[in-house]
Image (cartoon, rainbow, N blue to C red; front, side):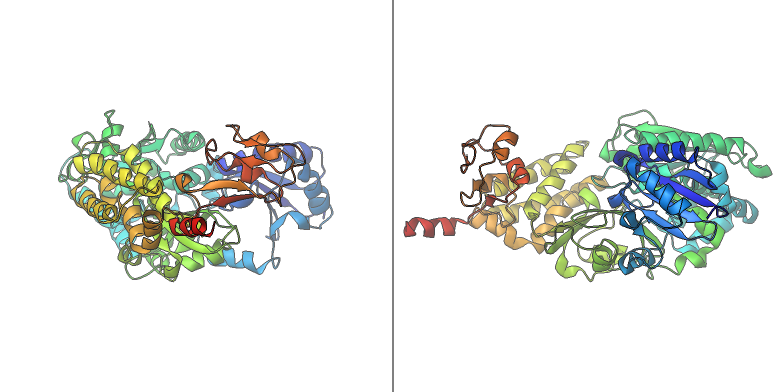
Length: 606
């Protein structure tokens, strides 16, 4: 094996670092400095397999590829001595290797990586790595064919904005180009605020130059000389790598004056946002970039006419820009061959929740929900029944498992009351209470409302009050019609996308899970046993071993007993936090939610 050259890549995006990948990288660096091996150690970004971080890829000059998952510093010596020096992969750590597992072959085969092409492949802190992978070739082509031809190429590709609304990218660029004014801007919306979403963060951390290149092409097409990346301050690693990438691009002549001798000038600046969800709406984002409070404004005029500092402005999100260089480099046809008639290309999703293989995936538009959940996601992690997915975050809809055959594209999701959103996809099993889910997302959206319009500010508050009543067992049948009417009013009366989509989780759960609402109202019963006001915790004396662990973790002192004898829970003191059930090693603690009718029959029997 001494004559073979190895490349070792360690995933050092936020997901990997949080799992301990930096320590793994440092250990490789330490041991390889002492070993007599032909090996290159490279830091890289997120490959998407967040469920088994830290990830280490070992490849050879013959392009054989092995992925190790859940690697700790203590595993480094085995990988070096057994695999690199001995030629034998460490089988118990492998998550992917040629012919190892048909399920993992399907995981990769079902995906088409365009926006994520370089994620987990290149070194995001080295522009040479990006150039070697074909970086800035899209920009060079754009400078050769001219602005109008660039817009035509994007039009032919069918690329639509990946920020949620799906507005045709070419049309936004064209309108901004046609707008009058000598000063124009492009903005990258990297204010990723959906709970559980991490698509933009992963691209910025793993492939920042692709976003910069996409913005350069957009700026050239519309005639802009200045751009802003509006990134939430909670993404420090993304911001660090963006700053590094901007400096490298300037040094190499891809940013600044007379770019690549073309006469095109463009500069780029980062603006850090404070994490306001409403600033994902483009007019609120513009206000924030200008240094004002981020609040939406009425349209028209649209940003393409009057945007940042009153000048024509084109805004796209991270994923949209990451697609642009690939389209210019490979051609519109190579991109548009994926997807459906009206939803071309691919979509990146943050796959999270009760799914085995959670992480970042990129799929062709039109793939079904079931394919994403089972073929790519590996199915339900708890072993329980698949119940629903939530797409589009707080603005999205809850889709039942019975509609798992629905293609994931803008039109198909819209027909069933959901939206694509920016790409969050939350998987839920049978233990999920859909009424509680609706309350969770509405609580988030209500708190993020800027309060400018009455429908959003007051309507969300009243809707939440109704859901609070229902989940506490105090709802009435009239509440169902009232909350539906309120939801429709908020959708139609709100000024911006936050208010217009805020009721979606409520309205879709009402549509598809009406029986759960009825159980909460008619029976004061939560079928999923999640609503705290409707459940209680009980210790089964036959299963309890009297270890006392449950009492140790109870923060409110609701559990009492003697060692080696069954313990008991005082329901009046218990706050239903669930720590006791999670700590019990003998599965002796039951979560009970009993319908009123069952309680009545028990009372008669007694």
